[in-house]
Amino acid sequence: MTGAAELKPETREKILDGARAAVARHGLKKLGMSDVSDAAGVSRGTLYRYFPSREELLEGLVAHEQGKFMQGLFGSLACVEDGEDRLMAVMEYVVRGLHTHDALQRLRVSEPDFVLQTIREQFPAIKAGIDTLLGPVMTDTAPVRLGLVRPEQLTDWLVRMLVSMFLIPDTDPEEMIGGLQSMYRLLISDALVGSAVGSLQPA
Image 1 (cartoon, rainbow, N blue to C red):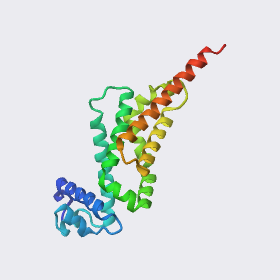
Image 2: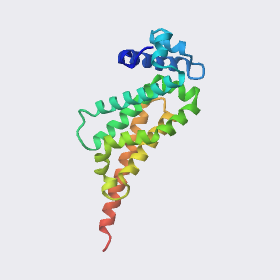
Image 3: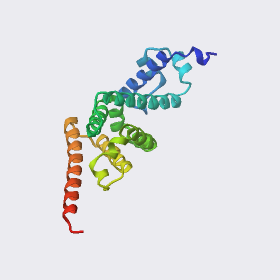
Image 4: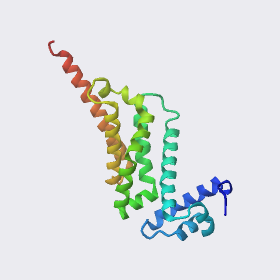
């Protein structure tokens, strides 16, 4: 029997990349382990050594893609200064990433039940990841400073908006990005105007 020490990370990565390609091509309902081994360029025996069942393979794929997504998100913010520019960069990265993810786009159309179930299950983790990245930024935004919303509420709003844009996408991701950023700027504008009006009221 192959021991855990003999399982190579690069082979596991190759299999999971192949699984993503196979899902993008076949969807999930018709996906077989042979489709994955063919796409990954490994034998079925090798595939089963790393993932003894289809269920374990799909669980591994979800975790793999989530990890790659968060790694890319951190990388996209490496050169962005602290401040609301980071929030805008996150919006842009997420919209572009969802729009270009071939497997997710296939599943969104062909197997929406699976997509919705996965989103429900992963929603707390997604929010926690965004909060890790943007917690300090959220605290310093105008709506939070003015006491109109709590940081965690702003994170929740952002994630829900991004999820809705994935489920009901625009054909042009640039339009989605622009619309999302404009909506946030409108929120800031309303908050600042409301604060200014309030300050003019007699005590």
